[in-house]
Structures are given as structure tokens and as C-alpha cells.
Image (cartoon, rainbow, N blue to C red; front, top):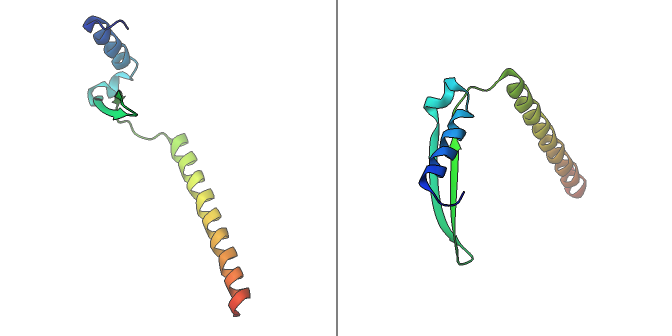
Length: 88
């Protein structure tokens, strides 16, 4: 993009059209800027809401179960370590 407003509008229109039509009305644009190591940084993000699919729900639940199991294993190992150190 060479800085023309029309190019930016075309880019945003293309991004909007890449969103499924039934969710386009919920699309939002966020533009923020900040200084990073003396340089101005501008971030542009486009987002929209859509319901979670069954596959995404299953994957998220599976990941949560794995994390819960890892946490329980870690806690049990710590319990056993402390029990060995201080007695039952």
C-alpha cells in the first residue's frame, strides 16, 4: 500500500468481504498506536464474533482436560515430595 486512502478503503473492504456474510455486521475495527524503542507502531485489528463450532468446543475441552490433568499431576508430585520431607 502506497499511502492512498482509496487503497486503505479497498483493503478494509476486502477484509470485510473475507468474513462470512452472516457475521459481517458484528465486525469491529481497532486502531491503536504506541511508541516502541523510539519508533511509532500502529496496530490495526479486525475482529468479529461467531459461535464456537462443535469441533472447536471439543478441542477446547480436550485441551482444558489435559491442562487439568497436568495440574493435578504436578500437585500430587508436590504433595508426595512434602509428605516424604515432613512425614504423613
